[in-house]
Image (cartoon, rainbow, N blue to C red; front, side, top):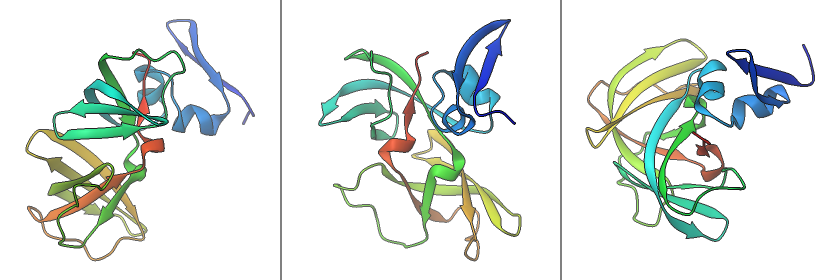
Amino acid sequence: MADRVAVLSKGQVVQVDEPCSLYTRPHNRFVAEFLGQTNFVSGKLAGRERDELVLECSVGKLRSNTFPAEMAKTGPVTCSIRPEAVRLSHADDEPRADDVNCFRAKIVDHIYLGQVAQYQLIIDDTLSITALELNPRPLKSVSAMINLTVDPRDVVILKD
């Protein structure tokens, strides 16, 4: 294993970085997809608040503080959210309006794999999300509602 890795597409270097940075902070869709499973969420830049960009997506506002330095101020974007970055809450409480990146989702499917459970979720019947839960609690049934949260640092806005 190397301390720096180059990812190539069609013979061209698209990103060179440490393995962890390549995985958690991919620059574009190709690198994000190449290095593992991810959720792609499309949206439109709606503004900036402090050190975060606010995206308007099909399920509401999504905040990110992981974006290219030369990010445009408006326009369409795609972000990458890794399944293990999605935090699940089995509480039945509705998310509060001031919760950041917190959504209510319906369980479409789940697989218990021992140390981890994989969930297929859908938010507002429009956005499909895969989530992984380490050391899973007893699984809720399919069609049950669950809360999910994503830290703004794990919403990675891609260059393309």
